[in-house]
Length: 250
Image (cartoon, rainbow, N blue to C red; front, side):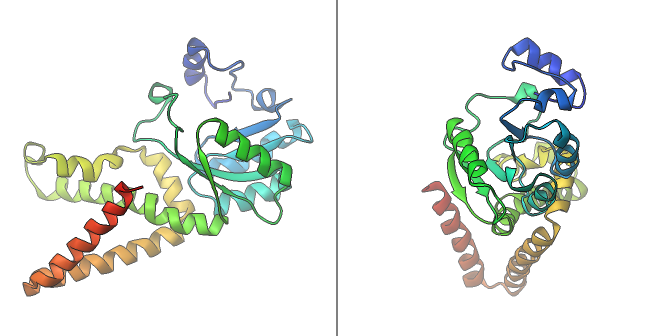
């Protein structure tokens, strides 16, 4: 395991689940058959560039980032077909080694994003890796992944943060008045702002479009409220209910 600073590595060593823990990137990747980048997405290309001289010729590199388009394009330009983009869709609002759990990837979806440049061996090793830790695999293009995740992950985070900020700005003593609806709608706003700034910027075109799509629905709800149009309000609420039920039925 590699980390930029020694503090988390002391906890890793104490827990005993890494054979080697170091801040020396070259030392960690030398001799590795497979390297997994688990860092903020905007740092991955620089790490790929720095590790390249120490990588074995047959080593493959994958990642766990939630944006694929820019990461795949830049890392492929550095590493070639040995890089295969991956996104295990799992996690919580907690960060750091103290939030680690052995069950994190159990039954999670991991999206792999091979391209025409991807080496078949790299794709196969990535499949086996993510299946081994408990994931089931979907494959799609980096562009299709980013379009979908902008709406299923990145937009919800932006909305949760906006809702939390809007309530804080407009309602005095709101913590005493908020219940489970507030908690459920804003939980993911607890995510690390630095990490999420990088994610939103890396997928900014698709996230911007998804915000526009949501804004249109909200404007329709506002217009229905102003007009006192119960049928339109009910239809919008029913559409949302049906969509949420589809998720619960998976």
